[in-house]
Amino acid sequence: VQLQASGGGLVQPGSSLRLACKLSGSANIFARNHVQWYRQAPGKQRELLATIRTSGSTTYAKSIEGRATGSRDAGEKTVYLQMNNLKPEDTGVYYCNIFSLDYDIWGPGTQVTVSS
Image (cartoon, rainbow, N blue to C red):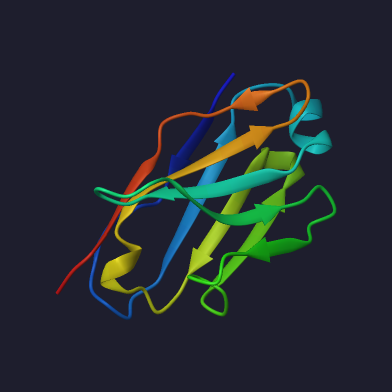
C-alpha cells in the first residue's frame, strides 16, 4: 500500500501546478483517513504543507496559504493540491502521507522545480 504522487515538473515563477496523490490500497483506508501533503526542499527538513480531512476541509501552512487549494476524490482514492503563483522557494519533492493509529503510509514523491 502506498501513496503515489504525480504532477510535478519544471515551471517558471508565477506558474501553476496541480499535484495528485493516489492511494494504491483499500478505498476504506482512503475514506477513513486524513491525508497530508509534505515538501522536502534541498537541505531542509520535511515541511507539512496541507491537511485534507475526510470531510474535505483543509488546513495549510503559512508558506502556501492563499496560493494552494486541496481537495479529495474518494472514487479515485486521490487527493489534489492546486498550487498557484509558484515561487522558487516552492522547489522540492512533494509527498503525501496517511498517518493514524493504524497506518503510516508514504510513497514516491513528485519533484517540483520553480526556476526562470
